[in-house]
Amino acid sequence: MQRNRALIAFGIAWLSALVLSWWLYRTSTSPQAPDVVRIVAAAKDLPIGKRLEASDLKMISVDRKDVPKGAILKTAEIVDRAVAVPMATSEAVLASKLAGKGSGEGLTALIEPGMRAVSVQVNEISGVSGFIQPGTRVDVLFTRVFSNGDAATATILQNVKVIAYGHQLDPATKVDARDAKPTVATLLVTQEQAERLVLAEQRGRIQLVLRNTLDGLITEATEPVQSNDLGIDEPIRQKSVPAAPRPAPVAAPAPVQPAPPAKAAPPPDEGVKVKIYRGDKVTEEAFK
Image (tube, rainbow, N blue to C red; front, side, top):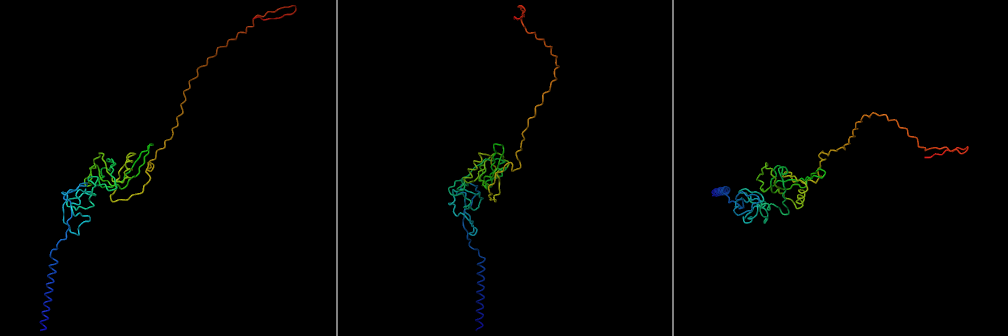
């Protein structure tokens, strides 16, 4: 009797283990209900400055753990906002990739609050052979030529963002480097920087210097570089001494002619002398 009880208990334990193992297997191998989130994505390639319409957007499903920060959950939230960063088809639309509400479209959508957009004329040389692109960073050099013919150059702006080159806003569209026609580069600057830049264009010549976009170092202002800093001093011109006039050739002296003998001066006219006798006295009188 006791033996039967032991067999029954062993059978029940074995059956329980079998059921538990089957349940664990089904639980681990059965597909889990996906935990997804619907977010807004680009329905087509969206260029920078584009004002979004409903047809430009679509909804995509993303695992909740893979939802990017700043994702948009409703298309109505971003319609009429402008694109600040180019987006590809099916790319998630993030708040950081859009301009602020009411900021307009095109170039105005790229102007951050408190900043100004100033365009400067450049050519193949001052535009770094056309390698200036929207989104690149530049320094601005100012060169002034003085009235005495000397010149000086100084850095007036550093780490300035280029938001447009000509009418181009999209960094993905490359500018033909062989195009040497003068164009304009639009820089994103503060109010004070805009004033300095406009004044520099009026008083001299500016040059853009391309820099690494990862290099945000701002150096301290230094003294303007002048010609003598390059080892090219103005040559000292010595005053020329006027040459002494050459003496005129001396002509041979003419032969001296003997002077004619001087004529003897006529004796002075003494008039007529008359002797007068008076007795034993004799007097002489002259009459002229």
